[in-house]
Length: 145
Image (cartoon, one colour):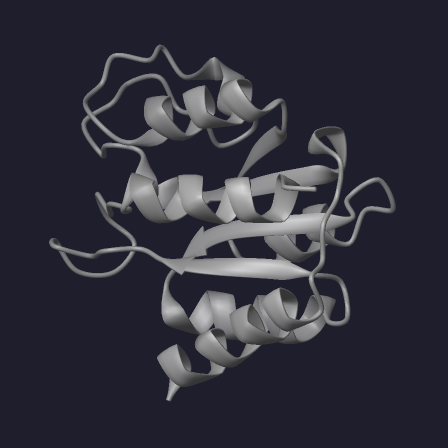
């Protein structure tokens, strides 16, 4: 059910042809994307990442830099919602599990957002992964003119 709702919200964003400037787009990254073995915690600031390459946080930050967008880490749904609802955020690309994306995309509507479901090879909330091609495609789509 969660995947269907996320697909629905993603389709609504695409049908509305929602676009924004790079500085108005926020990439939201779940803290569980960071390796649990990492000693450099990024829970307060994603820029604290050492970019060692042991998880995809480095890659998402690099995509953010490539496209000139903002990028933030959220330790949970409440913080993610608080970040997404900021007036300066006009569009959102969010990475999370189905439950968090479903709740988040519903809560920010009608603000345009694209949700990317993370991969959980070690179960929920630990050492998750993301398809970077999906993240880049979402960024390119939201920023095209």
